[in-house]
Length: 344
Image 1: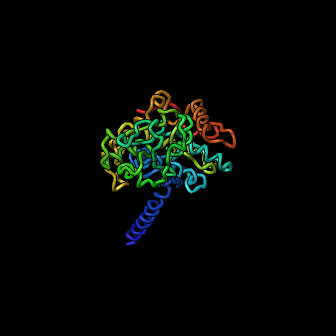
Image 2: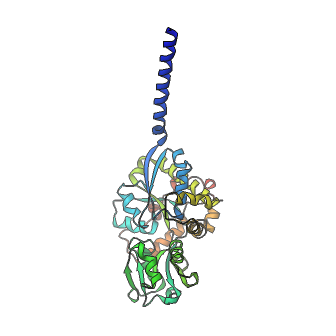
Image 3: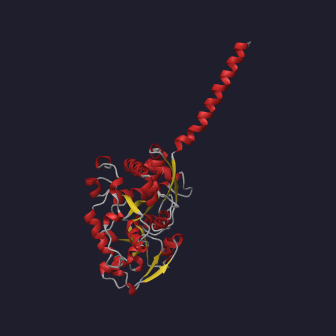
């Protein structure tokens, strides 16, 4: 009888200890909680971050990552600067202006996602817009937080466009493509892979859509990058390195198998259509992510000479209070070695 009591008590203690350990394991495995703000909704191009999350790449680096949507490429800047988010995905060109206007906020980019930006003016040929030379006398719809619209002053300067010859109408993102489809505006600003597919979904014939890419019309800029809060980076450099490493693995998996990667987007966006988001993702990979320069030199870094040229071009239309040093805006020290950054 005594032996049975001892065995029962022992089993109870073991069970209690096991239960306590199991209860503690999720907390121990969760890692440091951090938040990432995207530039936009859960659409195809967000897949690399979601793949890294779903496959446990962030968790393996000691991070418990929450990913939130955004409302434009410039919105991530104040979110990261204030510390509301430790990481952000936003336009590096807008970051330069933001830093200049807020000299006390040392937000930096630590990983380049769009080696070539998708900044575009998208018009309709039936409304007389095929090239930038057709923009005079036209009405352009511009969402204020849009990364492409942010480059309009530099675009006009580089191409000799008189800004006064173009009417800019401030519009919201939800009505951008519908207004162009209805003929309420002649062209709109936006990311090429977003606007074109949305217009086609709205019933605009593909052969009526004109895409004026800024990268092919005078502006040699970089695009969206991963941003980091300066206080967080200073206090947690290894976690920043881990975040970048995990994100790069997400990019590599996405490039290798976009069909599988887009599933992570669909799981978070009930209204998304798989064929549309897959097409959007493939466009981003082909035109903005896996460029010739990235294939040759690895993903995530920038060419400082080219970056300096882009700073010069931005200076054509924006007067910086303090001269911009590329190394003050982009910090490559958190990147893994080149051999770990090659894309499949």
